[in-house]
Image 1 (tube, rainbow, N blue to C red):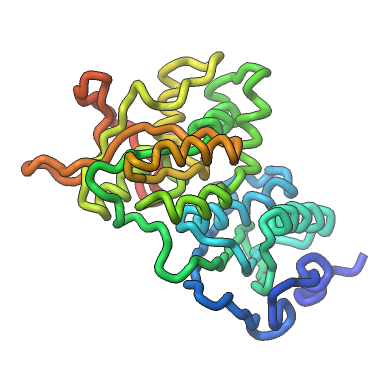
Image 2 (cartoon, one colour):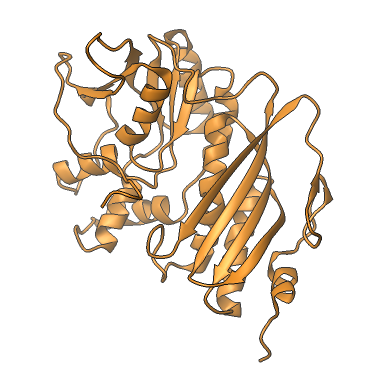
Length: 323
């Protein structure tokens, strides 16, 4: 079989009709028309084989996740996803693999009404880079520096399940059959909380998605907002059965790859958030509060018990440049 050239590869696997695009794949740049009255949100993520995913990961799931992690960033800003660009670095051309990867990528794009409008291909160690663009109503948007004193801290969904799947892949634990499929889905095909993010622009003050661990990512909000985050141990999501308590707690607090949303909101929105959870069929749990740090302490995350006593926690989240 003849080897595909670069532009044949792009045309064959990554060129489909696009909506709401003036000019898409096939030129030197895409031409886009943002909706009137919106602010453009832009994000970029790179996934590298052996760092962010195992090279043997099923390509359909990998295509889905490559886009999903970027849509999660847009969700954390309260943005409506619109467009994406994909850059592929491939050690070789495997058409069956590419077909499955493209199918997974487009499955995610179609579910969230995102148009692929450009990108690049090159030869080298397996890696993917995605730029995603979305729209936020002008004057709105969720940030990390806008949490307020007295805000509740909330988390969506099922934090920690992806980390448990990774622990099993690495041979550190054995998950019960009743839990394995759910954990693997959370790891390999995370669901970006787009609908939640869109609703939160009217309810929340600040937000971030969980990519490097719940406590680690909450610390970004603490530092940027110059506030202390008190996380209530007794309010955390229930740990799954069939996994050692300490292992499950570590996955919940420090495991990455969840792509759930952490957000802060004023207490008067609790009823509305409960209704939103029911509407989306998505657990939303109030796990803490924002407070002014004491004069002698820097903004940070404090894990506390039901009596307000601090619980020592030294396990951090994922850091790319710390071994």
